Image (cartoon, rainbow, N blue to C red; front, side, top):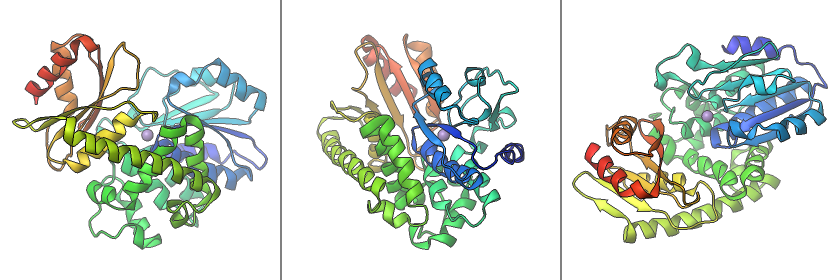
Amino acid sequence: MIEDIEKYLEKLSSDDQVCLLHHDDADGCTSAALFSMLIKNLTDTYPILFPIRGQGNVNRRLVNQMKTLNPDYVFVLDVGVNPKRLNIFKGFVIDHHMLEDMQENPHVLFFNQRKFEKDDEKVVPVSYLTYRLLTDFFPEEKVAWIAAIGITEDHRVELCSEVFEKVKEQNLDLFPYDEINQQNAEKSVFGQLWDMIRSGRMVKKIEGARTAVLALIEAKDRPDKLINGLTQHSFALRKFYDKVKYETEDSLIDVRENAKFHHKKKVIVYEARKSSISALTSFISDKIRQQYPEWIVCVIGRERGKNYKNISVRLEQTERNEDLVGILDKVKENVPTVNGGGHKSAIGASVSPDYLDEFFREFIAAV
Ligand SMILES: [Mn+2]
């Protein structure tokens, strides 16, 4: 697959204009930064960035906006956009999420490892793929640290350990552990960098995600400058991060006082407080998991209207061996209006408020 993508990219020539759509999470933002460097090296110009929350954002307005730019290529990273929607352009989509029914066409190709890899745990993040593309073309780029952020977010540290080996070679102080595993990555500065990159979208949505990508590009040879906010965009990002950190610390105090601790099954249920920060629910659930690694953590969100409640569930894989997807499937069988899915150790669910109590009764029973 990587060879096919590279063959495609060899067609690019200097002065080609590129629009780059990418997911606004940390895997998507790090992918966009690495791919931007590749496009800059190949065409002499950086692509125009369009961070998006999901494929639903690729609507007529966005397509028209790109049309007026008249790009030579449109590329999509880390979002399963149907190529049909972009077929007035030339380009490709690289994704790693569960496959939906995609209509590939001669204008827009669709790359996803899941077409041939059925084992979820062997599917690599897009940040790993874009890292491979960039360093295959330009081995002199010392950017393993950027890929390592997306890989940490995606829980694929062991699978992509070669990237962390490179980090040790290139910036030893960033990863001071002998053993390369998910837990050490989160404990290292990559846990902090992950939070910094995702704080962009949490505080300033699309603009914040773009700020994160630009900060990564600016600091590509100096990760210390990004961490300390010493470049134009990382200065802004650092402020978003401080805001998120402040709210998180408040919430963690609130957890101790107001969360329900179900001691027998070791399940924490916490109703998040109101916040101006978006996607705080999933962020807080990650933080509670880190503080209570032996517990299964459920956070009920406040950010979406009254029609349904969002619930983020997390567990620490090294401490608990339950499969959250299996547990959620059981809950779905017994409680109406439940939706959602995810990974073994992280799921998002939604349920109508009328069934919230029943949801947790069934959930705890299934644990
Ligand atoms: Mn991703």
